[in-house]
Amino acid sequence: MIIHVVQPSETINSISDYYKIPVDRLILENGITNPDNLAIGQTIVIVQPETLYTVQAGDTLESIAAQHGVTPMEILRNNPYLSDREILYVGESIVISYQTNKTRTIATSGYIFPYIDKSVLIKTLPFLSYLTIFNYRATKEGEIVSSADDTELIQLAKTYGTAPMMFVSTMTGEGIISREVSFEILNNTSVQDRLIDKSLQILKTKGFYGINIYTESINYDNLNIFAEFLKRASAIFHSEGFRVLITITPATNINTPNISFEKIDYSKLSEFVDGILFSSYDWARSYSYPNAIFPVNVLREMLDYMVSIIPPEKIFLGVTALGYDWTLPYVPGATEATVISYNNAVQIAADNGIPIQFNEAAQSPYFYYMDIDGILHVVWTKDARSFDARAKLVEEYNLQGLSFWTVMKFDAQMWFVINNQYYIQKI
Image 1 (tube, rainbow, N blue to C red):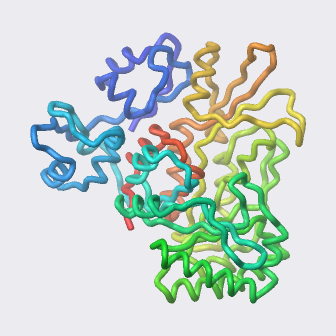
Image 2 (cartoon, rainbow, N blue to C red):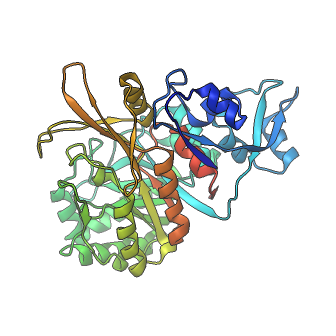
Image 3 (cartoon, rainbow, N blue to C red):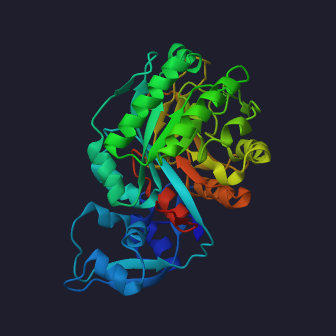
């Protein structure tokens, strides 16, 4: 795999000619939306196909997979655009395999809200081991409130060999946490019993594979209390055959240029669960200091600590594909960033003729630009180099896998990078 960084005067055609890969395939594989006006510093992932197949009359995804000794999921991962339609066109060329050096299988987990575009979900599911559905909110009485009917999503996940996970938290769809509810649950065993019982009913009725539990701001004061709750809850869920994951947002200081995190003894939680997803959600708040989101140098510091206290095979590394656009000067608590995709960021850079720069320590691209009103902006986002660096940490630290917040939009380049590094576990 080669990550090509666009240089001055290069075009999609010149890059295609140099690597001898058709333009349309470069565009499809990388999800390029600005092929006629590339931005300097934009990344394009180059992977040579190992086996190509030309579709014949009567072919189906299943028959082609069987003919080549692969699974239909592998073909969909190598050709995600096929998920957008129900038929194969005679004469079209599809990739059976790429020239890669995959050495291991990892688990992947993605968070979604019930209102996800079904076409996006269908395109994403071949890449996921677990699908965490953000749909269940606990109340201070131990009841559970759902925001939408997720029956179709659960069945769709199973169709693609992806394990649907019930996500329980005190968080609303807007990301607002009720600390009062969290306190009541953690300090009242009768409320806990009701919450566990209600969760178990939903797990069985809906056909979930397991549960993903989240509590905001685990700290030195509530760690032992949460551990006791988790011990009781996990014993019950495991006895009923359900898998138990927890999502943890490391307590961090994100309002200064130098992000830091608290070294809490999460080992007290790891023995009761099948996996811990260290989420980057809190590090991507729109009111945070303008900086790389989840910078690799901080990730390494965090992982060095985490693997010293937790079996690495239980750890999922959190990744966010989001980018942020801040106006300057930054005013703490007042300046709100706009969430943007990588393609949106690239388009801004291309339209303004601004080269995209790259922070090596953070492994994140960034640039400054002036809007039509003369206001200065700074954009921090992620590109193929960013995803490559973060994905490599899974191998380096021998982690269970990667967790993505969120997969509400399909990031072709991100999945292209990951698909060419790892096999994806299917449950």
